[in-house]
Length: 490
Image (tube, rainbow, N blue to C red; front, side, top):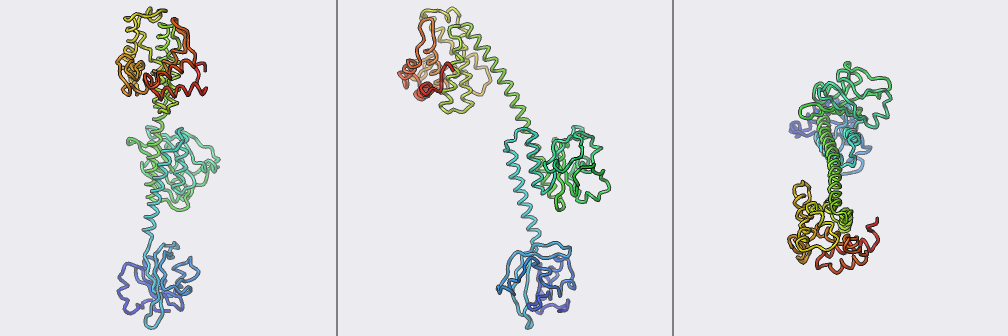
């Protein structure tokens, strides 16, 4: 065994460098020298190291030595070093054979990778958190409770924990409401638990609300300030909880427990960030649900209003009763056949229900006149599309309903009314309404003529196709009837 004060000749400078240097006797495989950096990283003194088998402190996971047993010229790889505490320290070690004073030695240099591994782990954990937030934001779970349960399972997984929970906090920050426990928590706990209770009655797990910061209890079983667990409660070994803030108030507490190793401040920071993001996503989903309900109520109100208006028009013109509804339904079917966006299809449906609303402004004796109209009367009737557009122009609706109503009697060749516009100047919605209006009018009975059959009406559409009526719209309408996928009698 070599004296612990021995320094290899010519290697005095190795004492000063910031890398671990260890010399091992190639025959005995015992450590004969280690520089101060190596001793510091091992947490040992020279007398504790010199004379020890190399494999006792370095490369404990290897059964053979790459240099001495496998004849490698150099061994350069990530290995492990045994710390005095028993912890295994990751190192990057490079080993080669050297000759000093006639002795064959292994020169082992190493760098402690602990900080690098910790940084890599932190980066990996951060990436996992980002990915988990993306998954949470796009999960199909729309119900707030389902979203919370999903997010809680993600929190438990990311923190490498066994159990987890989420409580909300009342605005006065004096009471807690249990929202959800993780699945594993529910499986392990048979104790009766209150869902609502004062903060003053909560144990040290709620310290994060009292102190308004994250709290770690890595020594939970030995804590003297804990209130104890009721019979049937799952055992708590380690615990971490964080408060969630909204406008300066603590609104929730998220906690996890029973990780196999201690929780760290970095993990508390990650949990706080994730919990806050989860809370914002939850708030957004709840706002979306409230908005959806509000929109549904408004749509219902709008639908009732439109039905009342439609009925008012039919009362003034009983000969065309049901005309607006049938035009609306056929226009919707044509728009769907053309694969328009659903919002656009719905706008066409609404415009169809309202396309004759302007007839309210036409004298009823003209609307119900059983024989032909003179020129002046015809001009008055033609004004219904203008009057309808004026009525609808004040309605705040995402689509230009008033424009569709004004243009539904316009024709591609400019022969329509009220503006005589041509071709693409007519909106597609109005062109669809125009075809649906012509088709429905032809197959319906009027006082001055009998109803035409479906085939006859389709032939008339074909004659006007590309001249007065849009080709693609006529073709879509024809496909619907000829394929049997649409009928006015359905």
